[in-house]
Amino acid sequence: MNIFLYELKAYRKSSLIWTGALVGLVILFMSMFPSISQEIDEFKKLLEGFPEGVRKALGIQVDSIGSLNGYYSYIFLYITLCGSVQAMNLGISITSKEIREKTADFLLTKPITRAKVLFFKLVAAITTLLCTNIVYLIASLMVANIVNLKEFSLKVFLLISLTLLFTQLIMFAIGTILAVVFSKVKSVISLSLGVVFTFFLIGMVAATEEAGRYFTPFKYFDYTYIMHHEKYEWTYMILGIFLIVISLIASFIIYNKKDIHSA
Image (cartoon, rainbow, N blue to C red):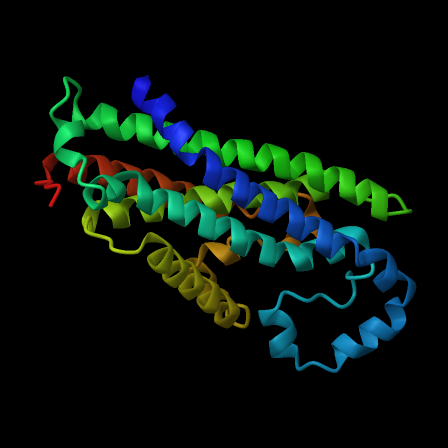
């Protein structure tokens, strides 16, 4: 339990920064909605001037962008991008930081198993992500109610917002196994940005090919599908859960067997 509290404290500053960034982004983007909705016809004509492939890659749905949920689904891609960097950063940090800070020998000689060490670290990181999402969800709902003058589907809004947590958990699990396999990470943020932006670019390409969606968590949730059906696509939900479970199980197995040195 001491490890859990220590890790929570260690993540406190960075989690506040990332949470502030996510809230700041949703406030910035949503504050533009009233102006865009007033000039929606001209805005749609502007978007229609983009090639269809570009619109798909950027997640732009011309027909629905005039509604709050339609506009929110468009800007949410970039909010998810920011949140994914946070999650990947957490995943890579939880084990690699002991190597970088040369505290691995000290930690692993304590009367506690490696499995428990990793378990408490994972729980602390996931708790951090949950807190971030709770604050973000509250802030986004408040902003949505302020900027929107018409009725909108709260269920769809919540379904879209919750995909942030699901995507973060997938990225976090991938980051965890990367850190366990490649323990000597010199720069966590550089690796985090590299991996996340690679998935993001794959997602832009996958926007034009259905099969490509399987290769990037950014495309596991189709916002257009969510708005029309008010539910997730279970194929991709199951795939995402599978990735999380397999990545975390593999992380435990590798971490328990791997020789870990602090230098």
